[in-house]
Amino acid sequence: MMKRTVLFLATFIVVLAIGAQQPSSQKHEVQSGETLYSIARHYEISVAALLQSNPGLQAEHMMAGQTIVIPAQTQETISEPNEPTNSPTQKLKERPKYKTTHEVKRKETVYSVSRLYGISETQLLEANPEIKKNKLKKGTTINIPYTDAENQQYQQELKRLEEEARKALIKKYSTIRVAVILPFALKEENMTQEAQKMTNLYQGFLLAVDSLKQHGCSVEIHAYDELSGFAAIDEILRKPEMKSMQLIVGPVRQANIASVANFAHTNKIAHVVPLSNDINLVNEHPTTFQVNVPYALVYNQVYNRFCIDHKKDNVIFVHMGERDDNVNYLSGFKEFLRGQAIAYNEVNASEFSHIGTMLKPGVRNVLVPSSGSSSAFNTLCNKLETLELTSEYPLQLFGYPEWQTFSGRYETLLTKYNCQFFTAFYSNANKHRTQLFNSRFRRWFQQEQYNGLPRYGELGYDIGAYFIKGLNDFGSALYENLHNYSYLSLQFPFNFEKKNTWSGYQNKSILIVTYRNDGTIAVR
Image 1 (cartoon, rainbow, N blue to C red):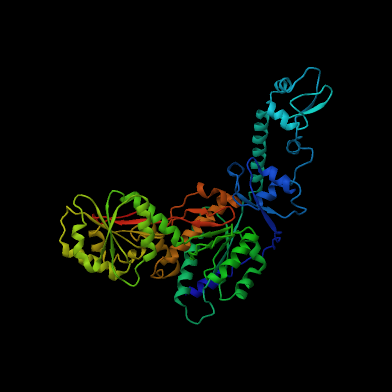
Image 2: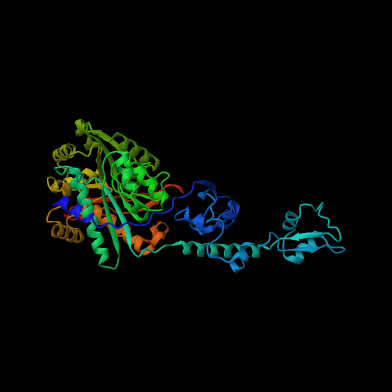
């Protein structure tokens, strides 16, 4: 049934025109006082070409030290499009270096001339380096620079023109064309677990598309089966319709991601990688979005959030002695606490009787186990039971993303010990929106989602709803509007940020889930 769904929907493919290949480029480090226009003039290219090569670049946010891409000179980039050479805009851009000239009269001095034109003596001398010892010679002609007010007005007008040029480049899409590249394993006789998950992801994506179509979005989907090997992915990328996409979702296999990211960058296509958490994935790929938060970014945010929430609590690290103890995470955790001047204690689970001397009455005692496994959780809870603590010693366990799988077996313990854990994704089965999605999923596809984490159907829905709506609302200006755009996710919250000017976007959003003593669950 699932294979038939994929094959059926993959037939809705339209052959589109092949886009133009982009020329090679170089990089430029912005200097103090430079504008988009001055940089464009220096490289003899148009502001429009400069903006095209730097998605999300905004004149008012350009800073000294920032690195931007300079496209190679082509016939199309030498002059601004559709701008007559005698237009007011062009005349402003061709402003002379100096405001005017002045013929020196008898008894005039540097001071009197600068006062006459409303400039400083320093400005006059800088414009006329040939003047010696501040003396003017009658009959000579000197340059008169613009006043500070005139220069400020000129820069403001240039920024206004650059903003107009940027807005003129924004493309609105009557139809959003999407390529989905996932390992559906259509050639396999039996569907693998991976194929079930990826099919769920695609099905969730289709539900998002259907919802958006009901609100006026026009979407065209092209589905491709991701096979192993570079030749297979290249075969997909060579298809004539690929260059006309506005969005590519996938691939999943790490070996294929760079090829698709390079293709998306070259053809200015938004590219979404659903699952990889490689910290270097978006390097040199400015149109790529990484959905799965890299571990290094997760940990740093966890440390920060923990310190905000628990800076006045009694923190105790419990070493469980398991083979999967998260040594790097805990080492960074302790270092961060020391940097925030937050004290903590440590105890081995094998010597748990010592913990009685570490617990404090009247304050929250937060225990952080070294492992997220179910056996470690069960062991810790059993040891806590032997202490027979009263309400005078409030306890909270702070754990790991794996704890969201404990809700069935250890529901009572999660609630009793006010358990809290961090995660980059969380599916709350009690949430009304999640229940509606699951009901719709069953109705459409006559099945439940694959029983695993993350919930791949919900992941596909979140990706489709976020990116297709963003492209529909903002067109090619999606990148620069990310912080003006919010989406209430089912499972994966999105907070995309660039690592640097030349990189793509990493999701930096994490969730803190807390089981309250009253039986409710708080997610923030």
